[in-house]
Length: 117
Length: 407
Image 1 (tube, each protein chain N blue to C red):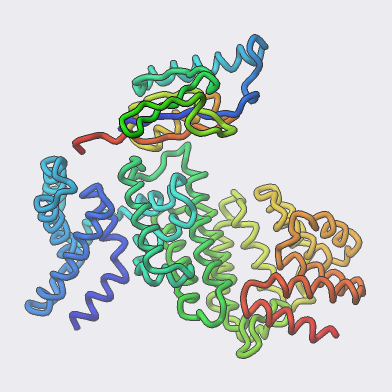
Image 2 (cartoon, rainbow over the protein chains, first blue to last red):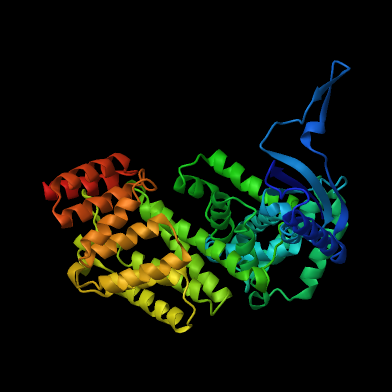
């Protein structure tokens, strides 16, 4: 089953860029990515730019409206994702727990709606 | 005759039949529907041709066939019909339908129902529905929910199991202990829900306590040599055996120190003690073992004055290492007061004031310590607050009786 792991954390909770802690944090991300590949669960994964760069788009009465900012202003922001193909939810939870941001924020694991099932 | 046999089987074996069907069809809802179909068929066929030699095997076989029928007819599983049909046929071919050959899949069922990806209340409801076989209505009554709300909760939980890929499996070694604790917590919650319910709800209260004891026994059979399962069973038996002394008609709850010990059920208590001995002998203490040992000391004492409070304080110290919570600290302080260390106990209780401000037992415990110190005004204020916070009629009556006895 495919799962999307959505990575949320609040501003200022990740180590400062360039600090030794930052290096360790990125190292842990690299290690998690390596495990995902070795376990054969990795499908895709990206980090996102800050929510201040987000644009929200809606179409109303055929007209495109844009709004500066993310869909919802929350303390914890979506900062990245992995798409993982796992045996079951237990494996998906095990993999999500390897994402370093899980230790400072929250990783939401959502099963992909597979059409045709 | 047939009615009695069907009822007995359903009561006793529903969990096992359902667990086997879920394994065969891979879907909670489909398995439940197929089992209902099989039961309906049993009413008709058994009335006509008598109860078969292996009623359980008969129900399972018919259940599997009805599941295939439902698969072929229904929209929901259309895409999976070929795959599921093969699964079912293989499952049927793989074993003769003798009751002895039906593998017990209930351990998987229990762990799936108590999976941490489900919220606690859903875990409890689903375990009562599928493993213990209570009806949705009974569960709704026990938790003061409407039938509709409870039905929706159960349905959401079952949908999530399928849609989110919660595995129908016993967790492996690395996950075993935390997952087992989750299962034990669910069972103990069921027991406590029954234990603390009001007197007006006596039948459903007893049902919940008995179901929890049944579940702990079942778990013990399915996963033997687990001291925490034994300890939980012992803990519940050591409470359950005192049930008759705990209520006085018209007076509500009776505290442990005022109970007529002749009303205790010695057989149940003896079983609790011997199950606890078995757990202790395995040399792996856990939170339930500490709690059961505390209850054992209460039960073994000849009276409130003869209770070994020193030992109870030590057991609370141990329990605190597993469960460093304010409620455990409060219980420890109460035991400490009983040893005569009033100043220490009083200081401990004071330090919990903010954390437990709205917790009725906190104020009842404060009142007790104030009583021992001889602070009449403190007792009055604490009891008043406890009465304000009491959740059930029984609790309120018990506290008011305490107040009357003192003033």
